[in-house]
View 1 (tube, rainbow, N blue to C red):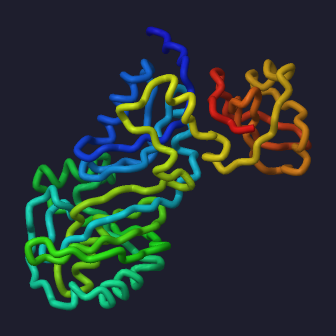
View 2: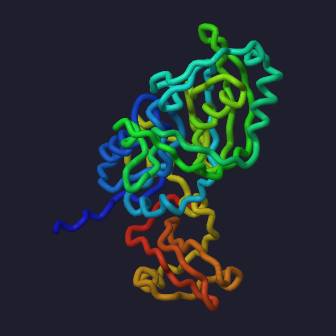
View 3: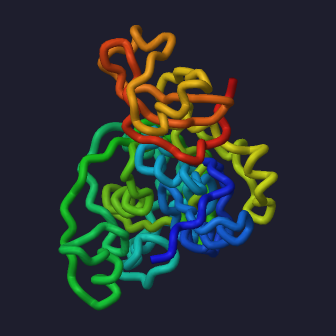
Length: 308
């Protein structure tokens, strides 16, 4: 078996995904741009969506499932008058409904949008990446299967109406959402249409923030390069939401072997978890026990981007 090539670039970076390509396409383009095979992403965006995607390169791919990205923000366009099979503009229309005059009324729309704030049980779209008996839901839907996905708890934390446009007689609401992880904005659009005795689907979507990482931190996909990633790398410790404990370089050998080491400040974090750093890089994640740091996840090639 061939040995995996040691990554020369190990970093988290935010990329502004363009419209019309898949999240897999973004990963493939980053691979080519930085010359690294080990690249992944945290949080899929549909082809018709643009915006913030957090990318892990090299050892940083191991962090993707641990990131503190439980909250995401979006700017959505919701078009009334029709539901689609996919709950967005890509799918065939499955149901049409009258457009009531009040759907063009800003005060009415603002109240309806504000009413979405709170905890809900949401049925995901049939065309989603949720696994059903080991098969993706979208694959079953494309094969013509009738699916009844279980409702899942989600939370809409903020919902603000920004405007209403008229698209050939159909109202299109522009709405800003901040939601919990796992929320489908397509499903919010679908359910909003039903709640207002109409029908609706998602006509456009832009992710404006993933956790604390907003669009201002993003690289344009065409600008991704090794040098650009190093300049724009996200702080992995901040992205994890963990306290940082600097480790003396003389102890790095022990850290990389998983040995517990004395670290200044560890006593205050007894029983918790911390990120061990050295030379502005993340070198390990550790449990704090008896005033010492015991590495649990060690990064043989340190992850760049730790801010002083």
